[in-house]
Image 1: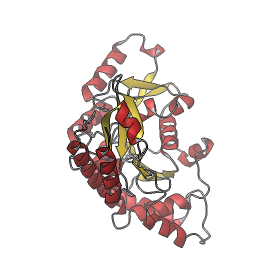
Image 2: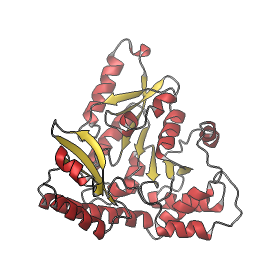
Image 3: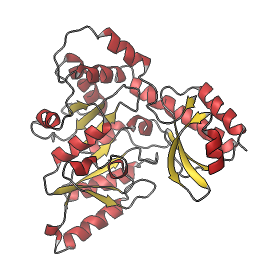
Image 4: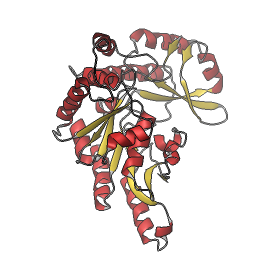
Length: 345
C-alpha cells in the first residue's frame, strides 16, 4: 500500500546505507569520539558559517529536546512554547518529566507571534507574585512548525531580539529543517538561523537518516559536561559512529539539501493533485506536510488504498488528515494517490 503517513516511513537514503555498509567493519572508538563524528561536525560548522560552533549528535528528536532543554534550564525555570509546539502537544510530557514546565503561548498558524511573547514576558515581570511562578527560562520553536508553516526572517529576528532583551536562550527544533530551508516560500537561510538562535538542531531522522539529530550550540554556550549530562539522561549512544557516518553522508555533496528539495517538489505536485480534485487544505503549508480536509466517508474509503495520518477533527462530518512527502516519495506514489482520490464517492 502506498504511504504518505510521514517522512520517515522508509529506512534510510541509499547513499547513507552505502556509507554505513562501507564503514561497518572499521574498529572505531565509541560515544561519538570517532573520526566520522568529528568530520561531520566540521562539515556542519562550515555549512552554518560558525567555525567555533559546538555540535553534538543524539539519536532522536524527543531525546534531543529533553536533553537540550533540561541542561540549559535551571531547576526553577520553564520553557516557553506555542500551544501547538511539538514539546507541548506531541512528546507525551517528556519535558515535564525532566522537572521543567512547558509554558504555553498562543499559536498563530502554529507559530509564536513576537508580540505575544513580549506580552507574556511583560506581564510576568509586572506581576508582583512572579517569584512564586515558574520562571520563563528559554524560548522553544520549531521550523517548520507542527502545521508545516514557516517563520519569516522578520518574525525570527523579532523573537530573537526579545530573547536578547530578556537574556533568554532561543532554541529551534529543526526535526524537518531541510524542508523549511528548501521551501519555495522561505526567506531564511541556515546561516541566518545559526546567527539568530542560541541553539538549534538539524534533523536527520525525518530527512533520510535511519536515526539521528545534530545539535548546534552557536554562541559558545554548550552546557558544561554536556556529554555527561547526555549519558545521565540515557541518551548517549555507545555506537556513536552510526550518527557520525550518517551526518557525514548527509553533508557531503549537498545530500541533506537535495533530500529536502525532492520532498518539496513532491509536495508541490501533491498540492496540485489535491487542488484538481477540489479538496481544501486546512492550512497553507509551503513545506512537505499537507493538511487536507476530507469528509469522514471519503477518509474511510481512502484508507483502503492509501496510508496517511489523522490530524484533528474539523467538524462532525469532516476530518483533517496529513499527507507527508520525503526522500522516498515517487511520482508513482503520487499517481496512486490521484487514482485513489478519483474513485472517492
